[in-house]
Amino acid sequence: MTQTAWVLSLTQFYLSLGFMLLFLALELGLAWVLFVLRLRARRGAAALLAYRFWVRVYALALIVGFAASLPLLFQLGTLWPDFMDRAGEVAGPLLGMAILTAFIFKSCFLGAMLYGQRWLSESAHTAVVGMVALGTSLTAWWVVVLLAWLQWPVGARLVENHYQIQDWFALLGGAAPALFGVLASGALILAATLMLSLTAQRTRARPSDAGDRSVFAGGAWLLLVAVVAQAVLVAGLGRQLLPVQPARAAAVIPQWVTGPAEHASLLAWLDVAGGRNTWALPGPSIPPDWLPPKPALDGAPRSGPKETAADAPKSPAENPPAVPEIQGLNDLIGMRPPVWLTYASSRLAVLLTGLLGLMAVWALWTGRRLGFEPDSLTPAGRIGLRVTAWLALILQGVGWGHLLVGSLPYAIYGTVTLREIGTVQGEGGLWLVLGLQVLVYGALVLGFRQLLGHTMRYGVVPVARYRGRA
Image (cartoon, rainbow, N blue to C red):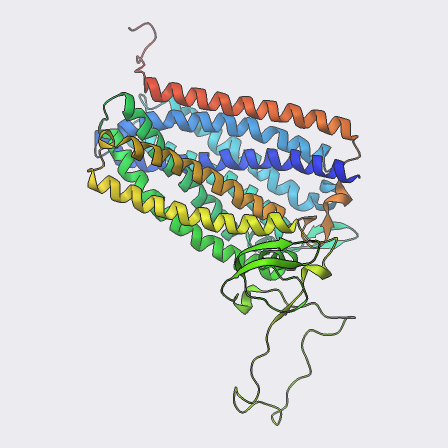
């Protein structure tokens, strides 16, 4: 597999995966927002007005997300033909559960959710909306379990180049709960910023109603809570993955030479060819439990000889704690991720999270000052809410990009590389498919945006209960 073919295959796959994850997250966040709105609609008309508008947006996201997931399944076989041979015992059941969950929960209840509101009781329709949200969450869960296992292959053992499951409970654990929390919090961030942005744009052309005011207030509070939750969950995920991924940890610090752990730089200009920082702004030290241990040499044990009672230290001054040592990037040439992308994406994600936190505080403060009346927003305020939505979109792309790029060149971290399972297709075919893929996804995005604009402009059009009625 040539370097160009490898890059083209990776670009195709990451484009499909990123597109699918984006709309899956948006679908997940909107599903739970709709469930909350449906619960609140039983006590007032404002939430019902909001529900009737946002269920249309959810349906659009669902259709685009479903269309984006189909190419991904084909690419597993065309771009990485040996993947299922290596990890089919793990990936097969997880993908099967994701597809089964999508069809059983979402498809069985989706029709009743979208078209059965007039024929179902309030309680029954609320339960249906809750089942759709649960089905969306379970579908996302199985996808996240597979992605988390590729980052940290626990619960399975590599036997003759084939992974065999040893413990399903361990496989469903590992980094999966933390990664699912990151996806869920990111989904709520996307949903909240979209709620704020669309509400600001809708009320520019028409007077706001009680539903718009309810969405404005709920979106501001949801954004603040979701940003804080994602920051905490990302820190927890990093604490799990960095100790088992020495190359990612070395790139994030960056740690160029094997030895005592360096202080993480806040910002730095990396000289990758020279193996050093040309310029760096020092940052805080990294907790030792976040760092991977230095690998033992020649099979020697990682720990030293056991202490006897006479050798035990009497005070910290006599035997200070050892400085942790980790493997440096210079010792990982050929098996390290793209250093610049891994380092820059981690800093950009932190910066975007901070900006979103500030924008969440500003949106909540502005909303409370205006009584959560979107009609009172200034032109600058409306632009600020639109910028917040774009920041949320970029943050999710950068965050997932860091997770995927930081694990290169591995398909299954530490054992199976992408080159081992890559395609033998020619570069010309890969270029052609990539061009077609960009055109198709571009058309999907433009179509989603156009339909979203149509929904914003005309709102919810009442439909008669029976055909033939005016």
